[in-house]
Image 1 (tube, helix red, strand yellow):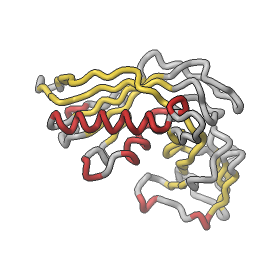
Image 2: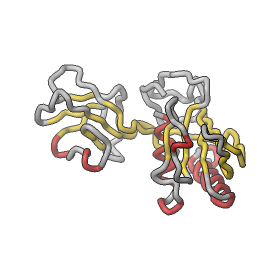
Image 3: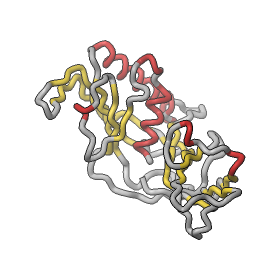
Length: 230
């Protein structure tokens, strides 16, 4: 959830003409950056060790300080510098410690395209494992994919924000997969370190220059918490 929240933040922070959007990826064991030939783009990942931790509503701080890394690949040095400067400014403007006495917004903690489950097999009631959804932004429900064409009209279901539940007016197919994107809290990040520039070598032994790695650490003051593993 935290990594997907950072991806959403990057997409919202950098304009499309900067080139970052929509090329922001969550790194998984099968991701090969050399397969992505169009730069610039970002990879977001957890920094090991990854410790799953349950949050409880009302917690003042995390028991485990989760860390993540943004690795961004660019075609030139000036764009890389701009990215780092913009990222620093955007993150610092949201963190409470730099905004004493103001209502610093923080980063939206998002469940992004979260696969819902149908516990009663009625093919109408679909739950997430995350309760206490925010009403704004309004959750988006998808069926069998994540394109605009897969968005389900809000007139076809009701939302229980407290439970984190979608109830359709009519029965869905047993083969349908239902997903939801929703906000479930607000979280602060501070920049833990910057390595700039770095050279990355792909599997074809080709070097890539003008790159930057930015490590992020969750700040211990969490403005809103969530009952969900990271």
